[in-house]
Image (cartoon, rainbow, N blue to C red):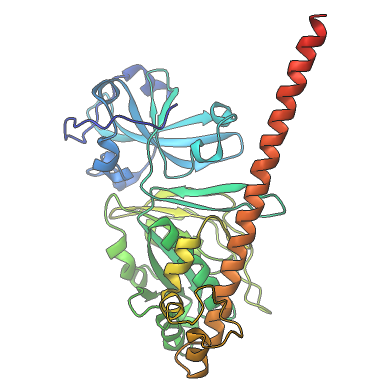
Length: 394
Protein backbone atom coordinates (compact mmCIF):
# COMPACT_ATOMS: atom_id res chain seq x y z
CA UNK A 1 0.00 0.00 0.00
CA UNK A 2 2.06 2.87 -1.29
CA UNK A 3 1.52 6.32 0.20
CA UNK A 4 2.95 8.03 -2.90
CA UNK A 5 0.07 9.19 -5.02
CA UNK A 6 -0.27 10.86 -8.39
CA UNK A 7 -2.67 13.76 -7.83
CA UNK A 8 -5.34 13.97 -10.52
CA UNK A 9 -8.41 16.17 -10.83
CA UNK A 10 -11.55 14.04 -10.82
CA UNK A 11 -15.27 14.49 -10.70
CA UNK A 12 -16.21 16.89 -7.88
CA UNK A 13 -19.24 14.93 -6.68
CA UNK A 14 -18.97 13.62 -3.11
CA UNK A 15 -22.12 11.50 -3.36
CA UNK A 16 -20.45 8.09 -3.46
CA UNK A 17 -22.20 5.08 -4.94
CA UNK A 18 -20.34 1.94 -4.02
CA UNK A 19 -19.45 -0.32 -6.96
CA UNK A 20 -19.75 -3.34 -4.68
CA UNK A 21 -23.41 -3.93 -3.87
CA UNK A 22 -22.57 -7.49 -2.81
CA UNK A 23 -20.49 -6.12 0.07
CA UNK A 24 -23.57 -4.53 1.66
CA UNK A 25 -24.70 -7.85 3.05
CA UNK A 26 -21.35 -8.31 4.82
CA UNK A 27 -21.40 -4.97 6.62
CA UNK A 28 -23.65 -3.83 9.42
CA UNK A 29 -26.08 -0.94 8.90
CA UNK A 30 -25.67 1.27 11.97
CA UNK A 31 -28.62 2.55 13.94
CA UNK A 32 -27.96 6.31 13.77
CA UNK A 33 -31.52 7.49 14.50
CA UNK A 34 -32.03 10.99 13.12
CA UNK A 35 -28.34 11.55 12.47
CA UNK A 36 -28.55 9.99 8.99
CA UNK A 37 -30.34 13.06 7.59
CA UNK A 38 -28.31 14.51 4.71
CA UNK A 39 -25.67 11.87 5.38
CA UNK A 40 -22.74 11.86 2.93
CA UNK A 41 -19.01 11.24 2.91
CA UNK A 42 -18.50 14.87 3.94
CA UNK A 43 -20.29 14.00 7.19
CA UNK A 44 -17.32 11.72 7.95
CA UNK A 45 -14.78 14.42 7.13
CA UNK A 46 -14.19 13.65 3.45
CA UNK A 47 -13.11 16.64 1.37
CA UNK A 48 -11.08 17.96 -1.53
CA UNK A 49 -7.75 17.17 0.17
CA UNK A 50 -8.51 13.45 0.02
CA UNK A 51 -10.47 13.38 -3.22
CA UNK A 52 -7.63 14.99 -5.20
CA UNK A 53 -5.38 12.09 -4.20
CA UNK A 54 -7.49 9.56 -6.13
CA UNK A 55 -6.85 8.52 -9.70
CA UNK A 56 -9.86 7.73 -11.89
CA UNK A 57 -9.59 3.95 -11.45
CA UNK A 58 -9.59 4.31 -7.67
CA UNK A 59 -12.56 6.66 -7.75
CA UNK A 60 -14.68 4.21 -9.75
CA UNK A 61 -13.50 0.90 -8.28
CA UNK A 62 -12.53 1.53 -4.65
CA UNK A 63 -14.44 2.77 -1.61
CA UNK A 64 -13.02 5.21 0.97
CA UNK A 65 -13.52 4.18 4.60
CA UNK A 66 -12.59 6.25 7.64
CA UNK A 67 -10.93 4.58 10.63
CA UNK A 68 -13.13 5.14 13.68
CA UNK A 69 -11.55 2.74 16.19
CA UNK A 70 -8.18 1.05 16.61
CA UNK A 71 -7.75 -2.03 18.77
CA UNK A 72 -4.81 -4.36 19.30
CA UNK A 73 -5.89 -6.89 16.68
CA UNK A 74 -8.42 -5.02 14.55
CA UNK A 75 -9.53 -1.64 13.31
CA UNK A 76 -13.09 -0.44 12.74
CA UNK A 77 -13.92 1.63 9.66
CA UNK A 78 -17.03 3.45 8.43
CA UNK A 79 -18.21 4.84 5.14
CA UNK A 80 -21.47 6.10 3.63
CA UNK A 81 -23.18 3.99 0.95
CA UNK A 82 -26.48 3.93 -0.85
CA UNK A 83 -28.63 1.07 0.40
CA UNK A 84 -30.99 -0.88 -1.91
CA UNK A 85 -33.90 1.36 -0.86
CA UNK A 86 -31.98 4.45 -1.99
CA UNK A 87 -31.24 5.72 1.54
CA UNK A 88 -27.70 6.87 2.37
CA UNK A 89 -26.54 4.88 5.39
CA UNK A 90 -23.43 4.39 7.48
CA UNK A 91 -21.68 1.09 6.82
CA UNK A 92 -19.16 -0.46 9.20
CA UNK A 93 -16.28 -2.80 8.45
CA UNK A 94 -13.69 -4.56 10.63
CA UNK A 95 -10.16 -5.29 9.42
CA UNK A 96 -7.31 -7.22 11.01
CA UNK A 97 -4.21 -5.23 11.93
CA UNK A 98 -2.13 -8.07 10.44
CA UNK A 99 -2.25 -6.20 7.12
CA UNK A 100 0.22 -3.66 8.57
CA UNK A 101 2.29 -5.76 11.00
CA UNK A 102 5.49 -5.30 8.95
CA UNK A 103 4.90 -1.64 8.14
CA UNK A 104 6.68 1.28 9.86
CA UNK A 105 4.59 3.06 12.48
CA UNK A 106 3.91 6.06 10.21
CA UNK A 107 2.36 3.78 7.57
CA UNK A 108 -0.07 2.06 9.95
CA UNK A 109 -3.64 3.37 10.16
CA UNK A 110 -4.74 5.32 13.20
CA UNK A 111 -8.09 6.80 14.19
CA UNK A 112 -9.14 9.45 11.67
CA UNK A 113 -7.25 7.97 8.73
CA UNK A 114 -8.87 7.26 5.35
CA UNK A 115 -8.36 3.86 3.71
CA UNK A 116 -9.33 2.73 0.21
CA UNK A 117 -10.91 -0.75 0.14
CA UNK A 118 -11.53 -2.92 -2.91
CA UNK A 119 -14.59 -5.02 -3.80
CA UNK A 120 -13.39 -7.78 -1.44
CA UNK A 121 -13.11 -5.30 1.44
CA UNK A 122 -9.33 -5.57 1.37
CA UNK A 123 -7.22 -2.44 2.11
CA UNK A 124 -5.47 -1.06 -0.96
CA UNK A 125 -4.04 2.26 0.14
CA UNK A 126 -3.77 4.63 3.10
CA UNK A 127 -4.43 8.20 1.96
CA UNK A 128 -2.09 11.07 2.86
CA UNK A 129 -2.92 12.97 6.07
CA UNK A 130 -3.28 16.72 6.53
CA UNK A 131 -2.53 16.49 10.26
CA UNK A 132 -1.17 13.87 12.64
CA UNK A 133 -1.08 13.74 16.45
CA UNK A 134 1.66 11.51 17.80
CA UNK A 135 3.60 11.02 20.99
CA UNK A 136 6.42 8.96 22.41
CA UNK A 137 4.83 5.79 23.75
CA UNK A 138 4.48 5.59 27.53
CA UNK A 139 7.01 3.48 29.42
CA UNK A 140 10.71 2.87 28.88
CA UNK A 141 10.41 2.02 25.19
CA UNK A 142 11.32 4.71 22.67
CA UNK A 143 8.52 3.92 20.24
CA UNK A 144 6.44 6.42 18.32
CA UNK A 145 2.69 6.15 18.94
CA UNK A 146 0.09 7.56 16.56
CA UNK A 147 -2.88 9.09 18.37
CA UNK A 148 -5.11 10.49 15.59
CA UNK A 149 -4.97 11.76 12.02
CA UNK A 150 -6.81 14.36 9.94
CA UNK A 151 -7.91 16.40 12.96
CA UNK A 152 -9.18 19.99 12.58
CA UNK A 153 -9.45 21.06 16.23
CA UNK A 154 -7.82 19.92 19.47
CA UNK A 155 -10.07 20.45 22.49
CA UNK A 156 -7.79 20.64 25.52
CA UNK A 157 -10.06 19.76 28.42
CA UNK A 158 -9.18 20.74 31.97
CA UNK A 159 -11.32 21.39 35.02
CA UNK A 160 -11.71 24.21 37.53
CA UNK A 161 -10.25 22.29 40.45
CA UNK A 162 -6.96 20.79 41.64
CA UNK A 163 -6.44 19.19 38.22
CA UNK A 164 -5.78 22.60 36.64
CA UNK A 165 -2.15 22.83 35.53
CA UNK A 166 -0.74 25.49 33.18
CA UNK A 167 2.37 23.45 32.37
CA UNK A 168 0.21 20.54 31.22
CA UNK A 169 -1.82 22.91 29.04
CA UNK A 170 1.43 24.21 27.51
CA UNK A 171 2.39 20.63 26.71
CA UNK A 172 -0.89 20.11 24.83
CA UNK A 173 -0.49 23.46 23.06
CA UNK A 174 2.95 22.36 21.86
CA UNK A 175 1.39 19.15 20.56
CA UNK A 176 -1.29 21.13 18.69
CA UNK A 177 1.24 23.56 17.21
CA UNK A 178 3.48 20.72 16.01
CA UNK A 179 0.47 19.00 14.42
CA UNK A 180 -0.78 22.25 12.83
CA UNK A 181 -4.14 21.86 14.59
CA UNK A 182 -6.31 24.64 16.04
CA UNK A 183 -6.29 24.36 19.87
CA UNK A 184 -9.29 25.30 22.02
CA UNK A 185 -9.09 25.11 25.82
CA UNK A 186 -12.31 23.84 27.44
CA UNK A 187 -12.75 24.50 31.16
CA UNK A 188 -15.18 22.04 32.72
CA UNK A 189 -16.89 21.97 36.11
CA UNK A 190 -17.20 25.74 36.12
CA UNK A 191 -20.57 25.28 37.85
CA UNK A 192 -18.71 23.85 40.85
CA UNK A 193 -16.25 26.74 41.02
CA UNK A 194 -16.82 30.12 42.68
CA UNK A 195 -14.60 32.04 40.27
CA UNK A 196 -13.91 30.32 36.91
CA UNK A 197 -12.68 33.69 35.60
CA UNK A 198 -9.38 33.32 37.45
CA UNK A 199 -8.71 30.08 35.58
CA UNK A 200 -9.62 31.72 32.27
CA UNK A 201 -7.28 34.65 33.00
CA UNK A 202 -4.39 32.26 33.68
CA UNK A 203 -4.94 30.47 30.36
CA UNK A 204 -5.23 33.75 28.47
CA UNK A 205 -1.88 34.79 29.95
CA UNK A 206 -0.31 32.05 27.80
CA UNK A 207 -1.78 33.45 24.60
CA UNK A 208 -4.44 36.17 24.52
CA UNK A 209 -5.67 34.88 21.14
CA UNK A 210 -6.18 31.34 22.41
CA UNK A 211 -9.89 30.34 22.39
CA UNK A 212 -11.07 29.45 25.91
CA UNK A 213 -14.58 28.20 26.72
CA UNK A 214 -15.94 27.56 30.20
CA UNK A 215 -18.72 24.95 30.20
CA UNK A 216 -20.79 22.68 32.38
CA UNK A 217 -20.19 19.37 30.58
CA UNK A 218 -23.47 17.91 31.88
CA UNK A 219 -25.56 20.75 30.43
CA UNK A 220 -26.17 20.50 26.65
CA UNK A 221 -27.08 24.20 26.50
CA UNK A 222 -23.76 25.17 28.07
CA UNK A 223 -21.87 22.87 25.70
CA UNK A 224 -23.42 24.73 22.74
CA UNK A 225 -20.60 27.24 23.15
CA UNK A 226 -18.43 24.70 21.32
CA UNK A 227 -20.64 24.64 18.20
CA UNK A 228 -18.34 26.91 16.11
CA UNK A 229 -15.83 24.03 16.08
CA UNK A 230 -18.43 21.28 15.59
CA UNK A 231 -19.64 21.98 12.07
CA UNK A 232 -20.44 19.17 9.65
CA UNK A 233 -17.33 17.43 8.37
CA UNK A 234 -15.10 18.93 11.08
CA UNK A 235 -13.15 16.49 13.24
CA UNK A 236 -12.33 17.32 16.85
CA UNK A 237 -10.23 15.43 19.34
CA UNK A 238 -10.76 15.64 23.10
CA UNK A 239 -7.63 15.36 25.18
CA UNK A 240 -6.82 15.90 28.83
CA UNK A 241 -6.15 13.97 31.99
CA UNK A 242 -8.59 11.47 33.49
CA UNK A 243 -11.59 12.85 35.35
CA UNK A 244 -11.83 16.26 33.66
CA UNK A 245 -15.14 15.39 32.00
CA UNK A 246 -14.17 14.27 28.50
CA UNK A 247 -16.64 11.38 28.37
CA UNK A 248 -19.39 13.63 29.76
CA UNK A 249 -18.64 16.12 26.99
CA UNK A 250 -18.90 13.34 24.40
CA UNK A 251 -22.35 12.44 25.71
CA UNK A 252 -23.53 16.07 25.71
CA UNK A 253 -22.16 16.86 22.24
CA UNK A 254 -23.45 13.66 20.65
CA UNK A 255 -26.87 13.93 22.28
CA UNK A 256 -26.64 10.28 23.32
CA UNK A 257 -25.05 8.16 26.06
CA UNK A 258 -21.97 7.19 24.06
CA UNK A 259 -19.48 6.91 26.95
CA UNK A 260 -19.65 5.75 30.56
CA UNK A 261 -18.59 8.28 33.20
CA UNK A 262 -17.12 8.07 36.70
CA UNK A 263 -16.71 10.46 39.60
CA UNK A 264 -13.28 11.85 40.48
CA UNK A 265 -11.51 11.12 43.76
CA UNK A 266 -12.43 13.76 46.32
CA UNK A 267 -9.03 13.98 48.02
CA UNK A 268 -7.03 15.10 44.94
CA UNK A 269 -9.62 15.69 42.18
CA UNK A 270 -7.90 13.03 40.04
CA UNK A 271 -10.00 10.89 37.76
CA UNK A 272 -10.27 7.23 36.91
CA UNK A 273 -9.90 6.00 33.34
CA UNK A 274 -13.37 5.76 31.80
CA UNK A 275 -12.45 5.75 28.12
CA UNK A 276 -10.12 2.83 27.37
CA UNK A 277 -9.66 3.32 23.63
CA UNK A 278 -9.81 6.01 20.96
CA UNK A 279 -13.04 6.19 18.98
CA UNK A 280 -14.86 8.63 16.67
CA UNK A 281 -18.44 9.71 17.35
CA UNK A 282 -20.87 11.60 15.13
CA UNK A 283 -22.05 14.79 16.82
CA UNK A 284 -25.70 15.76 16.58
CA UNK A 285 -25.90 18.73 14.23
CA UNK A 286 -22.62 17.90 12.49
CA UNK A 287 -19.00 17.09 13.07
CA UNK A 288 -17.08 14.15 14.46
CA UNK A 289 -15.59 13.83 17.92
CA UNK A 290 -12.65 11.68 18.95
CA UNK A 291 -12.42 10.80 22.62
CA UNK A 292 -9.03 9.65 23.93
CA UNK A 293 -8.17 7.88 27.19
CA UNK A 294 -6.75 10.16 29.86
CA UNK A 295 -3.03 10.27 29.17
CA UNK A 296 -1.06 10.23 32.38
CA UNK A 297 2.11 10.42 30.28
CA UNK A 298 2.18 12.69 27.23
CA UNK A 299 5.75 12.51 26.01
CA UNK A 300 6.20 14.81 23.04
CA UNK A 301 7.65 13.24 19.91
CA UNK A 302 9.59 15.31 17.36
CA UNK A 303 7.92 18.53 18.59
CA UNK A 304 10.65 21.17 18.59
CA UNK A 305 8.71 23.41 16.20
CA UNK A 306 5.57 23.14 18.35
CA UNK A 307 7.47 23.99 21.56
CA UNK A 308 9.15 27.02 20.01
CA UNK A 309 5.83 28.25 18.64
CA UNK A 310 4.05 27.79 21.98
CA UNK A 311 6.79 29.75 23.76
CA UNK A 312 7.23 32.31 20.98
CA UNK A 313 7.84 35.19 23.40
CA UNK A 314 10.88 33.36 24.81
CA UNK A 315 12.14 32.70 21.28
CA UNK A 316 11.75 36.42 20.47
CA UNK A 317 13.59 37.49 23.63
CA UNK A 318 16.36 34.96 22.94
CA UNK A 319 17.25 36.84 19.75
CA UNK A 320 18.36 39.75 21.98
CA UNK A 321 20.72 37.66 24.14
CA UNK A 322 24.46 38.39 23.86
CA UNK A 323 25.27 34.75 23.04
CA UNK A 324 23.54 32.90 20.21
CA UNK A 325 23.69 29.65 22.21
CA UNK A 326 22.47 31.23 25.45
CA UNK A 327 20.71 28.71 27.71
CA UNK A 328 18.92 31.47 29.68
CA UNK A 329 20.32 30.30 32.99
CA UNK A 330 23.06 32.52 34.41
CA UNK A 331 24.74 33.85 31.28
CA UNK A 332 25.55 37.61 31.20
CA UNK A 333 23.31 39.91 29.15
CA UNK A 334 20.57 37.29 28.81
CA UNK A 335 17.41 39.04 27.59
CA UNK A 336 15.22 36.19 28.86
CA UNK A 337 16.38 36.26 32.49
CA UNK A 338 16.30 40.06 32.36
CA UNK A 339 12.63 39.88 31.36
CA UNK A 340 11.97 37.60 34.34
CA UNK A 341 13.71 40.00 36.72
CA UNK A 342 11.69 42.89 35.25
CA UNK A 343 8.43 40.99 35.68
CA UNK A 344 7.77 40.79 31.94
CA UNK A 345 8.10 36.99 31.88
CA UNK A 346 7.06 34.38 34.43
CA UNK A 347 9.84 32.20 35.83
CA UNK A 348 7.41 29.26 35.67
CA UNK A 349 7.06 29.84 31.94
CA UNK A 350 10.82 29.53 31.36
CA UNK A 351 10.97 26.42 33.56
CA UNK A 352 8.24 24.81 31.48
CA UNK A 353 10.07 25.74 28.27
CA UNK A 354 13.34 24.24 29.55
CA UNK A 355 11.59 21.05 30.65
CA UNK A 356 9.90 20.47 27.29
CA UNK A 357 13.01 21.29 25.25
CA UNK A 358 15.16 18.98 27.41
CA UNK A 359 12.56 16.23 27.05
CA UNK A 360 12.52 16.80 23.29
CA UNK A 361 16.30 16.50 23.09
CA UNK A 362 16.35 13.30 25.16
CA UNK A 363 13.60 11.69 23.10
CA UNK A 364 15.37 12.54 19.84
CA UNK A 365 18.59 11.00 21.18
CA UNK A 366 16.71 7.90 22.34
CA UNK A 367 14.92 7.49 19.01
CA UNK A 368 18.19 7.97 17.09
CA UNK A 369 19.90 5.38 19.30
CA UNK A 370 17.05 2.91 18.80
CA UNK A 371 17.17 3.36 15.03
CA UNK A 372 20.91 2.73 15.01
CA UNK A 373 20.40 -0.35 17.19
CA UNK A 374 17.73 -1.63 14.79
CA UNK A 375 20.04 -1.03 11.81
CA UNK A 376 22.89 -2.86 13.55
CA UNK A 377 20.56 -5.76 14.37
CA UNK A 378 19.45 -5.86 10.74
CA UNK A 379 23.08 -5.99 9.58
CA UNK A 380 23.74 -8.81 12.07
CA UNK A 381 20.79 -10.88 10.80
CA UNK A 382 21.86 -10.29 7.20
CA UNK A 383 25.42 -11.37 8.00
CA UNK A 384 24.23 -14.44 9.92
CA UNK A 385 21.94 -15.45 7.06
CA UNK A 386 24.79 -15.10 4.59
CA UNK A 387 27.09 -17.23 6.80
CA UNK A 388 24.47 -19.98 7.04
CA UNK A 389 24.12 -20.07 3.26
CA UNK A 390 27.90 -20.30 2.82
CA UNK A 391 28.11 -23.06 5.41
CA UNK A 392 25.38 -25.09 3.66
CA UNK A 393 27.16 -24.67 0.32
CA UNK A 394 30.28 -26.45 1.55
